[in-house]
View 1 (cartoon, one colour):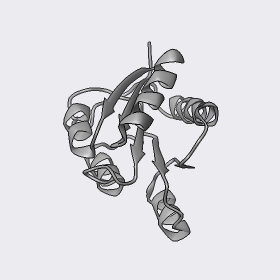
View 2 (tube, rainbow, N blue to C red):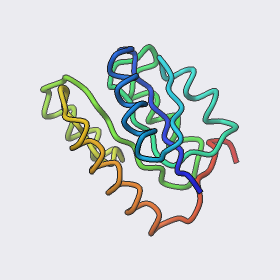
View 3 (cartoon, rainbow, N blue to C red):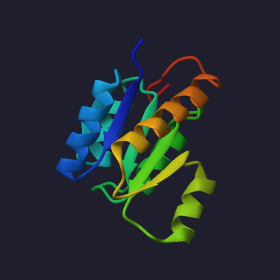
View 4 (tube, rainbow, N blue to C red):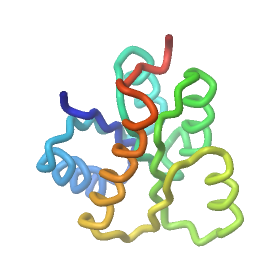
Length: 133
């Protein structure tokens, strides 16, 4: 069964590059230009990983809170951003973000990190879930 990855990224070029790379690696990818649209989809569809920019329309922090409030299962979250605020990144990692990837990034490196997160998560839970249970 294919793993489903949700991408919430407001930069169309970055989003298209992520979708193309991840689909080539065999993942099902759902891309959204903002966190609000991603949440609507995630509420009724199972997914295995969220990759979000820190500042889409509904910013990454609010999106992370929504996921954590609506599910009791830990869904891995990869945050991608141009931020250089170490305290902010540390706080997000403490809040439950699984990985932080600074922009710009190499797609090969991001792919390896995605595989690692999905492998770690599959050892903890066996199937993907929608946000609302």
